[in-house]
Length: 105
Image 1 (cartoon, helix red, strand yellow):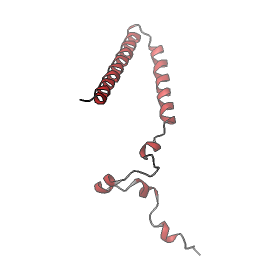
Image 2 (image 1 turned 180 degrees about the vertical axis):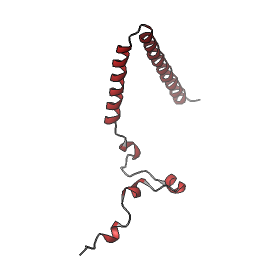
Image 3 (image 1 turned 90 degrees about the vertical axis):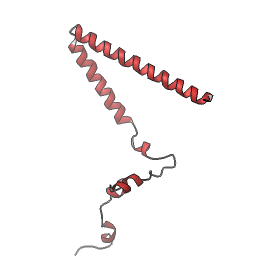
Image 4 (image 1 turned 90 degrees about the horizontal axis):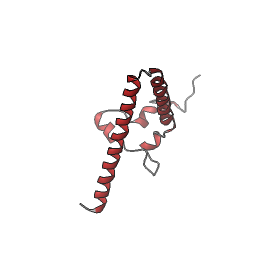
């Protein structure tokens, strides 16, 4: 193993350990609040947590993750192979290009 992969493995292990510690701390806090009958405080904390999660999701740029750095959309070959209409084709109504020049009388 070279030094980069060892460093990456150590970084993953550190993040995993940190995540586990945070999860155990949150579980312990919830159990303590339930044990000491502080359900009202637990409701407030859970409401604030959900609001924070919704704000993070609202501000995240989900659309930009589907495009590479060049700005062109990703290939939908998986959608073509499975018979699903590609996202770009699904957003356009069918047959509008042929009727665009005609007007009704």
